[in-house]
Length: 340
Image (cartoon, rainbow, N blue to C red; front, side):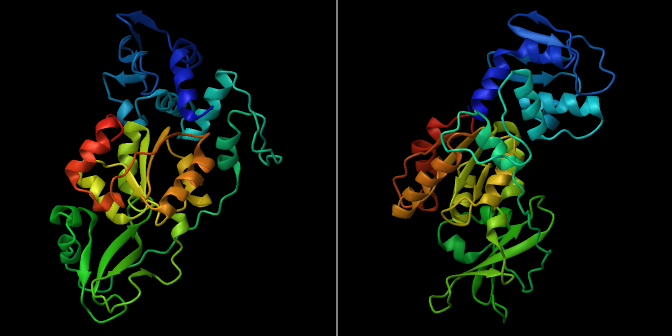
């Protein structure tokens, strides 16, 4: 059972969930109404509404769904947060939901080894959540050169100037290790600090083609564009995963705001842990259309197939970054409405 199936079961048992949250409800015109369980002092008996057909809720007086997402997991998290006077995270809301729905959980803080064929429906999810993962935090850095934004190099490669400005990508010609390179900033998960940069050579003789700074930067701990994408993830419960930064930029130009790059072909254990902390039920995988990219899809399906709904759109080009925006919209996004 993956998160999508759990959410479906929550929707089917909405009245039970509402009762456990202490809500007194009434049904009118196919919708369920109640006072809002999220904000304090709610006395409007129809401040809250839930659509069983769409599986979404809305607070009509304070728009609480914007702070906690508009699906069942968001409601549970928001209501429990208000009740307990603290921020209840997604994993706690998930655990609460499983208890209410009588979904068996056979794990502990230190799970015993379980065969791959385990019939525990939440084993894969909880295995990642409970496992102690070293979440490394890099020290903030500064770009020590006069950066010319937007990057003329990437503009010459077909990217829009506005896109380069949005992502802060520019060219550096000052003396130093990043001389004659296009600079791609990498931020921390909150987007507050710069923790790394990628320098893409703009001259054939400038090797290596890609250079990470600071030296020893460990890309296993990050997704590129994470802090921007997470805002849209709150609305869609969906995340697009691509290999390179250029793929993220092209998807942005096509209107996709919830895309991240994994800096290559593999989703690391540290990145899996971050995914498990997010309100995601659907992953759309757009690795490159080559042998390595196809092998990556197989590995990702093995890693995450029982935890999320996975979609693998077919690419007609080598990668998303090589595609035209109109082709992305007509061949990929036309079948993915509501996911971005």
